[in-house]
Image (tube, rainbow, N blue to C red; front, side):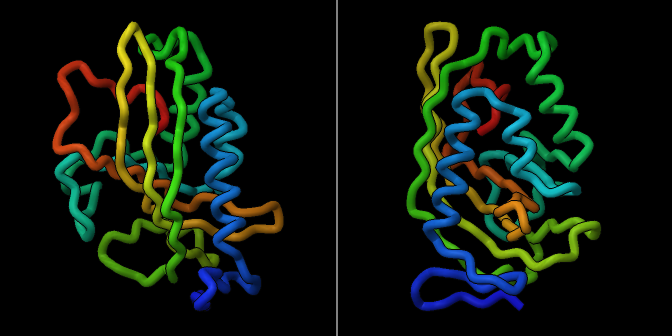
Length: 186
């Protein structure tokens, strides 16, 4: 059973996970992505995990699978995305964009089952929900863009540390500018 304490920690999978531990995990992930270490990034996921970026008209409670998404990767597509981004076949990211990520306002909550939960049936262990705000600055082809939004993740504690079960990036933009690309990990 997953429970939240008044101190901001969560009891999940037989152990207590602190907000500081989750923040450190998210900050490490940001650093891994800013350094284009996609093998390191993929290692932050449990097998069977998902990666999602819903469209800009997304609202909590909607299913990104039914209402549309920019990215809706199951485990196989996630691994294929990483393989492509590491190769020269990722033409939109060759050479790589320069990115700088800021993560803030990290909040933990129990993983209450709801209509928007997309947990895989392969993953039956306990998880908890993490919400956080982000800003990703991206420099590419003489342009500088800022992507602003929030994360809505499901994390699971493992013997090797925290892992993503679901990594969802929700853009706060009303729309993306003409020519904007999500060819990098948001």
